[in-house]
Length: 64
Image (cartoon, rainbow, N blue to C red):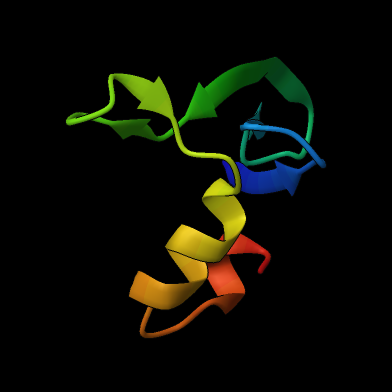
C-alpha cells in the first residue's frame, strides 16, 4: 500500500492510496479529498498545508 498527500492551492488536499498484491499487481486505487476545519469559525482553514507543516515533526510523509 502506498499513501501520498497531494497539495493544491485551495482549502482542500488529496490523499492518494494504491493497494497492490505481493506480486506487484494493483488491487485498488483510492483517492480521497480532505480539508481542515476551524471549529470556532466552522470554516475550512485557508491553507491546510501550512497548518500541517507547523504541527509535523517530520514533514516528509505528508509531502510538505
